[in-house]
Image 1 (cartoon, rainbow, N blue to C red):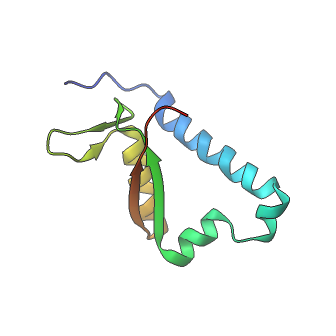
Image 2 (spheres, helix red, strand yellow):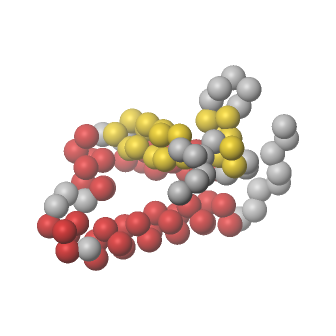
Length: 95
């Protein structure tokens, strides 16, 4: 299956979602008093990312069983910048 041509919105969408998550976590009183997601990643050196593998070109599984796509590439780049091991958790699109 050939992936569709990329659009500029994919990486921006992912970064936008990460920004929204960070703002929500920072503004919630319970989260502000506990360890942030970023602090936990920096402490444990593990970044866990949820993905839906059937959503090309954002996320898909290659014929050899590896996850690939724009969102996967962005997650790999973020993990590398943080010096963290990357773990994917595959989810369904429902709920």
